[in-house]
Amino acid sequence: MTKRNSLSVKKVSVLLSMVLIMALLAACGANDKANNGGNGNSSNDSSNGGSNGAVGSEEQVEIRFSWWGSQGRHDRTLKAIELFEQKYPNIKIKPEYSSWDGYWEKLSTQVAAGNAPDIMQMSILYIKEYSERDVLGDMNPYAGTELGIADLNADVLANQGTINGKLTGIPVADNASVLLVNKEIFNQAGVELPAVDSTWEELLIKSRELKGAVGNNVYGVFDASSSLEAFMYYLFSKGDTLYADNRLGYWDENLKNWLEMWEAARTEGIVPPANITAAALPLSNADPNKDALLKGQVAIMGPTWIGSFPAYETVMTENVDMISYPHAEQTGSVLQTAMFLSTSAKSKHPKEAALFIDFMVNSLEAADVLETERGLPENKKVREYLEPKFTERDKKMITMLEHVSQSQPAWYDAGPKGAGEVTSLFEQVLQKHQFGKATADEVVAEFRTEGDKIFAKNNN
Image 1: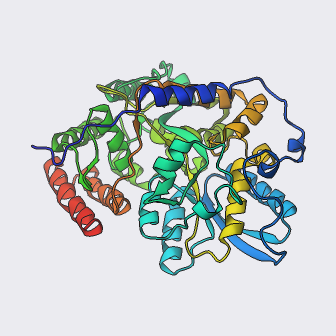
Image 2: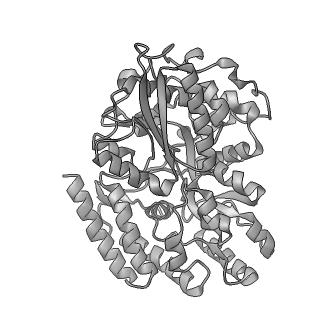
Image 3: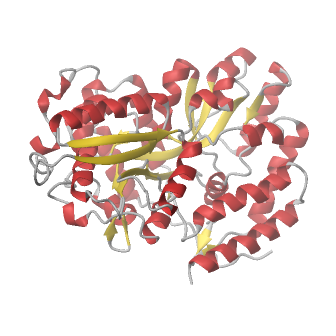
């Protein structure tokens, strides 16, 4: 089989890695200093370029803010909203929140109806697509006034938050892809935990060991074969790439190898059967109370992001840990922005929306409440401010981010316009293989053909 429009994976340069590491090292410190409520400081008090007071007149306005996450994130975000409303009593924030699995369907429906929230939490998976569809507002007019950007990573703002010249996403936190490990299952089985840098073959061997020790209702590794994100990282580890020139760009042989690896594991019974896999929630930023890792059905699950670790650690305490995404010739872990805050292009109150984003990203008041729940803060001054409060969990997140940064990872590739539709297509087509309704060759051919049709339709 041949590769179509092949491109080699673009590596993160050593310089960029070292810049990230130095920024993070500055944030590693001892426990418990700033428990004083932030001393009333906010972005407007700490030279971040934000404005003072409410925007414009004292007219009462209401703006909607939507986000996904766990209950812990919801609780902290609602407290931050209360603080903002106390500071700006003429601005009312109406919260709309859910877990990851329902968030995008609801947002898509709202956008189609012309009723998108004024402010929305945005993923790297979809920011390019939503921007190119003119769903997201350009925040450039408010940068440096209502919205401070001086202490945010300029490279991230330019290369990920700016789409076609429009600043449509303000980065919230730094992140890297990982797998999560249920340590309790390994301890009960008497099996050694997997190494932080493992191959897929090594993890499947661990799955086999666990299966022999704990029986038929627990599996070592969750079947990630139908996740396009998981496949993309597998490609990176092979020196391949998912997209090229607005089309699918990988070697077909790599997709066939991916399918056959998982098929063999299902046949052996060392990963969950298709019905368990299909019933599981997506892991990334989903509610940990509902997925197979917490339920004890699987011991290793992913891919997810370092930024999701606090939600799991809150529920599972010392029984959860992280390892890198499996490597082959090179690491499969990637770097990316944990998430963005974006505004709606149709918002009637873009200045107030920008002011709220400024508060969430730049203010020390919000930092006292939000801490690292959304990941390691992108704002370097906020991260330094939180340093004395960093827990062992926070330090573990920093250590993992440093580890990935030093492994010459790729940057996350959100793909061409239409990537969201192709992601859904991948899951649908790959589930045929999981349930034994299509061969690996049939899946390889169908996804290539139908995926490129979607990209052709969206990128002419």
